[in-house]
Image (tube, rainbow, N blue to C red; front, side):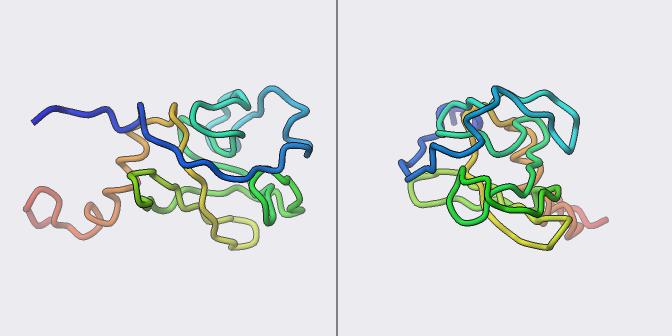
Amino acid sequence: MARRNIGAGRRQRGKPVHRDGPARRGSSFRCVGCGLDVPMRAPGTAHRNHCPHCLCSRHVDRTVPGDRASSCRGRMDPISITVRDGGEWVIIHSCAGCGWIGSNRSAGDDSSLALVRIAVRPIARSGLLFGHER
């Protein structure tokens, strides 16, 4: 069976994006999770909304992706992964500030290891990882 790089070449579906907001003013942001300087441009998406290294985000959007209309600004921690029809991976985030739960589509340069770690987290916590009980 051929191995496939999960992080590279994921197909992305088109979606409407608010392109006139403050997100277009800067060229990078500092990650609230790991401190990495992250470029705003990302392969496979019209705007960057999370760190490609640790997958953390900041609660900045309210209703439209890229609108930057939320006043919370809390840290959004990745809590789960879901997969849309067609194989697109979506990161589920929970806001540490207000408890809001939202989803962000993965970007082409997201860490494959970080994505897989979140995806297998429920299995690891069950104690049945690799068929062995803890």
